[in-house]
Length: 200
Length: 202
Image (cartoon, helix red, strand yellow):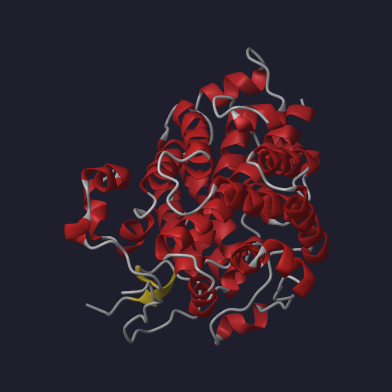
């Protein structure tokens, strides 16, 4: 796994110093630095609290696996292994990804004129056997991550209560939401810049 | 006291996409103003954000909030060439329309309308959705934003080529990518941690 000083977006896109895309990224230097600072804040935090590195990378491996971008998913799966996760846990994450893949965004609006745009899709719950391997705390986080990846407009207070019931604190839930949301950004910057690089 | 979900006060739920000013009500307890440390206040970046329940909730993870906010500011406010501000905001509004974030769409539709002075086109995006015909340049930006927002991502070389045909250079295309990607971040925070509310008429 790359150290936290390696720019993750550059590494995953394959941006070389002095290349055209390197020059483009340098025109938005703060966006570049702070995207990396976001990665550090979420995956190598100064104050991790009760939210362990293994949990952070397990959640990230699940989220990136659901997006189906193999390079990015492999990066976070490697981060999970490097955090000291057991082979059993890494295997359970892979099993959870395979069972949860889908297409988004879907979901419902508050009842009214927008209801005609409601689209349905699965409300995912990690399967019982995988739940046992992940533990109930991580399994609850995965259920929440699936919601944020594929149908965030279906979010409701009951989903947050389920996380509290599984042992996540209010502050942990803010960090969980940041991880899902930041990865949705990072994955898209990587995918977008990769297409831009190839379309020269 | 154990952590709990908080029930928002009685409010009017917005049921359409709108450029009107909306409020946002948290489902989890924000930090109290008097509980903010120097580190939390630094994470807000703008001191005025101390009044915002959204930013005081995100301040529970101050380093993540600070980096998020500085990323946001450079993507949207850096005025060194690239995509005009109005069209960065268009990408943000289109992404929010597609993902279904009524609150985010309201803020960035207002910004896009203000900077472009194309209120009717922005309103059509809100009313009709991301397939509204806004003219080829805006259609290309909206289509690219949508393709970046699907999961799995469907953004491909034809989107880049279409953006080039309407006059965007690589820096401007990178701005579209970053604006749409950033709103996939922002939408998920706003949608997952609280809900929009109509503000009372004054």
